[in-house]
Image 1 (cartoon, rainbow, N blue to C red):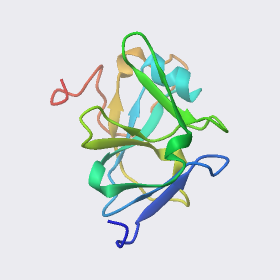
Image 2: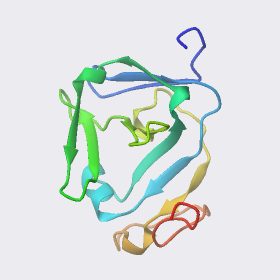
Image 3: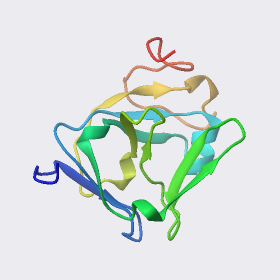
Length: 140
């Protein structure tokens, strides 16, 4: 696995947590729900939904802290600097990678916006990517 070149790398603010991504990068998705707004401190949370085999921890996996709400919603972050951290989903097959952690200026398309039915009134979505009131129909 480590022999392949990365198409992108990323890290937290202090550099303790870092990772590499292989193969073609997926589009960025935005969630506008109240939980994602609170954890990001902005109008939405921007993530890449990456297949697990395309993701590799380079450092700091043991420095990732998990916060879970009673409903089971989770936020992962670097315990040193507080930056959001990649989140391996429960089934182990996908990883949600915070787009803002990527090094450099990746030219990524936008896949869409979810939970726009609960977005902040002050937020303006300025692109023409698909928008969904809650989950997209296929995500159910």
